Length: 105
Image 1 (cartoon, rainbow, N blue to C red):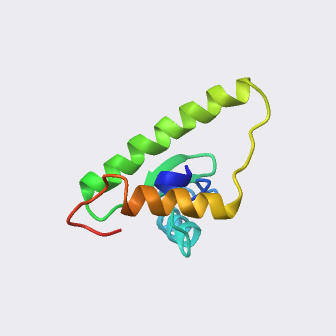
Image 2 (tube, rainbow, N blue to C red; image 1 turned 45 degrees about the vertical axis):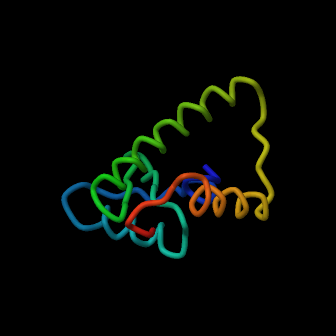
Image 3 (cartoon, helix red, strand yellow; image 1 turned 90 degrees about the horizontal axis):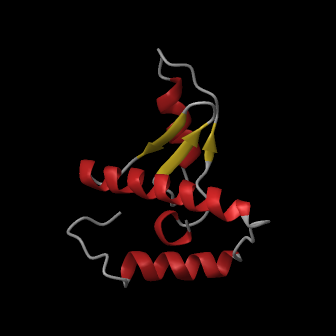
């Protein structure tokens, strides 16, 4: 989560299908965050990206992270990384670790 999303994937509010509340909830939840994914309460994940391919990559990553967290919880309490460690991991992954693309997030 630190590398790809810059910390925990945020959880957005419950939004009813049929109006613009899902879109508003996604935008409000992601505003001011590095994450390109949000888990909308009682609904599921939504992702954004610089283009469709980037958004799909974020969707695959958030599903992979969810699976990893699910299995890790079976082993006991999860330990949260300190914010400065999250920042270092995010910067390294985004700017150094083979993530060069033509599109900057």
